[in-house]
Image (cartoon, rainbow, N blue to C red):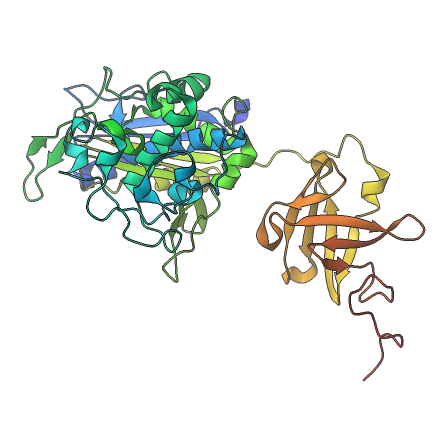
Length: 460
């Protein structure tokens, strides 16, 4: 999308603060080069770089290896298959692939890293060795393919995403990389994202932990493991991907499916969690801000992309170093700095273009027993239920063709809201997943399960 003109350029103070952050990141992280970028309202509004690659200052068009950011691309392909009806997220993987090692694991569990599969592939360190060492899917597994019962806990699995890539190949009948290019990269205009490096690209380096000297890192073709971490990309291309993750693109995936992907796929294991995982998407909480995206690493490279839907911002950071740079923090700080210096200006309020009297009749106070709620009419015939006083279960609802509404979030996500007419044909009560909401607290009518005492409300 194209940002409004007033959002097209950052203020000088903002640009300087962003440059300072990547300069600190590059110096303290001791990385040969570091590129940063900010996306606002779907548009690339800032890039900056420190260090050099082959004596040249890198730019938004310089390729870096992005490691596990590849997983989000793979997840997009899987969700496309789901949206087309070619699979269900609840399907066991073995329904589509002959992989007995993953017996019992579902597609959703693979996407959320709750399949219980081992973290790494069989054989020597897969990120530094040729994929030819693991030519077939069966060659991915060691002596213990499963290290946890499927669905019990979050356990990051590179092998699991290799299987998702194989699933894409099976159902599309074409190599994973070809499907990715055709269905995601080309529609989004990501012409500088590829399986192998294309000039100009950065070389990968390791930095000695106790001396300022470098060691070149190998850049192997990982073969079957490619869907877990093979891709090379640029700040400019990742800006296009960030814009897609923010708003969707009907040529690839709609906004509703992307919202589904960033919902937590497993409960956090820490009481005070600051990170989680959805369906191929990492989640993070930083200074009260909810971020989604992914970080990545391969020998010689670090990458991070974070999106804040509330701020309509994304931050991207790429470095050519194996370790040491806090790349996830750099990308998150690019979002924070921009939001703090230039808070989002909300769009203008506008009234609905038309008002359905039957929907207006639903708005206002409703009561679940004695608890008051307000029902508001949203655009596209949607509804929003919110507790009066802030205590209670809130949810937004999507209108369905049959005259019902489906919950989009919170406790009522996926639940059905129905309007039950009274004898006069007007809305009598609401049925929300079997809960009854009436126009008065415990209204004396047959709608309330268990009935209401005929003497009604009384002093003690």
